[in-house]
Image (cartoon, rainbow, N blue to C red):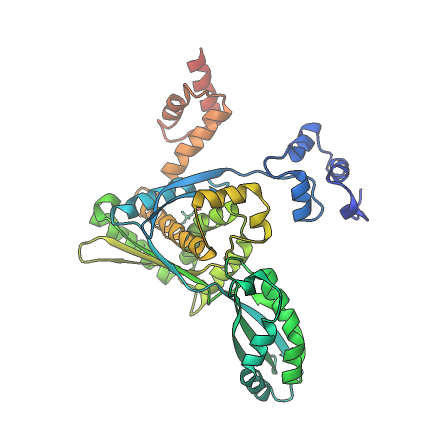
Length: 418
Ligand code: MEV
């Protein structure tokens, strides 16, 4: 069967499913797994993306202990990886001993880019843009939009001449306040609408008009003091600092260090239906400015406690797009109790810092496999048919020699049931 299926997009999810079943030789059970939906109905899913045949569920866990700027938070995290929720809760538990996280954020300013080519004199074109800043801003903001009504819109204009393969082009940046939206749609509309004026002013030819995911004007920061005793003593603090130095010195380690931070951040992004790819692209590019580096910094204070700080671009929204469509995303927002996109960004920064602390602490002490193994053993016990009344005993027995396996789990479960 060919994968070229004309009109596939016009079919209903059920009709598409029939075709996929035939193509992939799916069993009825497999089809049923795709067909079964949770709180996101097939109708809603079909309006969100193209060629829908079903929905897919992931676990949603709640990280506890978060105290951020004096406010208590429960953090919904959607992720397939074990230990992430536990690690975040753990990091936050230690942070709250010394008052929790202090977090802050900049205004929610996104960059919209306009690429101008075919310029006789790029520097002159740049001057024309900068001299007409006010005109560009007022024309760009002359539109019916909730973001404008709320005081958002274009706030500033920048221009740079860049060069590639001997060709110079002008890149115009519109700095756009997106208020509580992530803003991709708004920014893209504004840059598209402003392109003719930019062509007129520069006498060049506009090619691309698109937001930049490197949101260097939309930053979030968090910091916390982690009590040395709760961490396991000053030796542990020193070991964490050594682990941090490794990340500072080596890009291979820094990438994994930052991956751990993104474990937490992306889980909250998913739970709130924010654009994980946009944030991830921006964060890694931000980490690469001046050479790829860890997103967190770690140091020791005079008391021997550990101080952690994080700074990263976080283009997130609490209105618009999928955040307003997915029922679970709406509930996640309610659980978080956040009132603005900036507050969400601040929570995300704190989660990233907690996640990094927990990973570094585990890595610098007993390693991460022990914790993973316990969860793995629990999964094996469940798969082997352990019921609630015996599961703890099964896990304990499985962990005895540190090498849990499915066959061993089955044997233990059968013995206990007998
Ligand atoms: C695993 O998902 C994340 C870690 O590798 C992060 C780290 O190494 O810092 C544990």
